[in-house]
Length: 234
Ligand SMILES: *Cc1c(COP(=O)(O)O)cnc(C)c1O
Image (tube, rainbow, N blue to C red; front, side):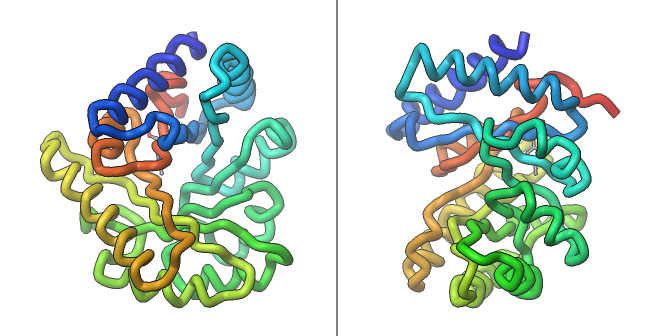
């Protein structure tokens, strides 16, 4: 059942935080809902609401979609029930559609995209800069060596606020290698803040298989799909 799996994930996150000497309340959970039917997402949100009624210290789960098309399809059903983040690549011709539903774009990887977002937002949009910490060619994100400069440039735009950094960890069974990538994102976040972008405190990193490593390295948002929803339908 989704409620049990969600509770399991909450326990894993909390235990990882305690093991790292951190406050479990400092790590939020984002449900990565790609390819999942909206009914299952609603079931997870209802389970989360019940869990929070029983334990008011819990913060609400967020919902993350990878594709703008799915964001647009599920947005009307989820509106008002959860904050929606875009966690996948955003093409410039889909900026308006994404902004209709997403309160945060976690996948900003160029100044060009950030400029388009800023130009089409009237108030202030939260963004995360996606960094490719593993260097894997298949992965999106700016190179680690470019992250600090990009953050400074994006932070200077009028209608976006750099809330933090995001990464998809290395696809590897080598826990030390995965963890090193998360440590790199944390040190880049510290550099970005030290260089003057003090809003950039968040670290969105860790998924179903490796969230403990990410929490140990300072994740403030873990993005979990299969551990809550089971295997993804194709
Ligand atoms: C699918 C996905 C996740 C969640 O992956 P799971 O292994 O199913 O937990 C997290 N982040 C991004 C960007 C994803 O695409």
